[in-house]
Length: 187
Image (cartoon, rainbow, N blue to C red; front, side, top):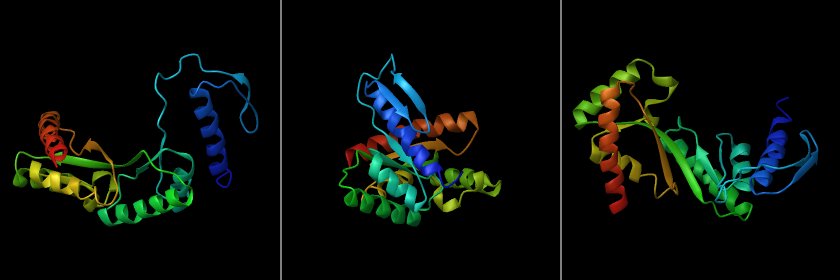
């Protein structure tokens, strides 16, 4: 039932958080457990991120999670709008997020021209139904600038997925992504 899905999620999320924190958990709600424990617990406290794109779900992430993961299909303008919703929710709920992340599907090319050729070829093939404006490709310098644009908005992390399935191109892009990372660390 779609109307019960948010409350069911919150109930299960609370149980998982408590179990991983080392509590012995009993519940007679939707999920019936009696004196449940997790034998192998994380060494460090778990940081919980919730991925969400609908406004109520983004508010829920602000209220109950440590961080938020924005949808990979967001254009820059939508990413700006939705982080505003999230940060407003954090203020409303008295929370300080530990992470505000977005996934970008990327290709770091040998040059701007090579990246453009690869990116446009992938878009023409109908890449995952994403708006091409949500994708990132370019030279090392271009990708650095595109990633850097997320910082003033409040994003703390960018998770990447490579656009191409061509193994050699992925390895090359990954190598150049290390250059992107170093440039971002310096700035």
